[in-house]
Image (cartoon, rainbow, N blue to C red):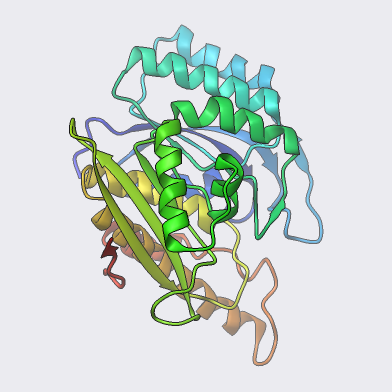
Length: 306
């Protein structure tokens, strides 16, 4: 992959041990030929699913200082910006300012945003972060990857059917982003309840024609951390290689996730021993071991065009 236009600014969490946030996104993007500049929004010992964690949080002011340094050297030129989990409203507002400035410098810049707020009906960020996403962030995003709950929060609609989900994605398009992927939903799969349904919608060209897809992934009985961050990073990468083909980009993205998760669960079960549930340390994504799958994934799912 010869990537002329592949410089990514990724503003996400950092952990000393394990794979979440920037640790989940950087290596896969680098393997696929992207230059990744990382700003670590937090630096923790490990993700917060462990019994203990320690660390530091970057403030909005400190984020600004780092960006100023980049700017003073005139190297604030990016093709992509990637953001994920953020707890602090002023930090998120500073991110929006940076995105707007970088878009002025490069009008073709693509902002890939995972509006992480919660899951399964409950929020795990402060509630005052929602209006910042709703009123400021989504408007400047180009690719948005909410789960069902986050999409419902952003639009004020409830999703019970596939049609509801398509309507919600249309509303999200109207709010800004040309590409929207609902990374997980509670919708029933035509193939039965052992499958997780994701949906995508992409506006293309001057005519604004829309490609809508459904993609299904086998459910895995374990809690992984960092998979959402990997999903969004891979969607960035594969959308770059398939700019007007959301179907292909999503098939490759989901296939990468499938291979990484499969390798991880196999390893975790081996480490835990028979009849024991793996612990968070054993369930850390087998990222480095999956290098070949990331570079050239065997396609294990086919998306349906709706």
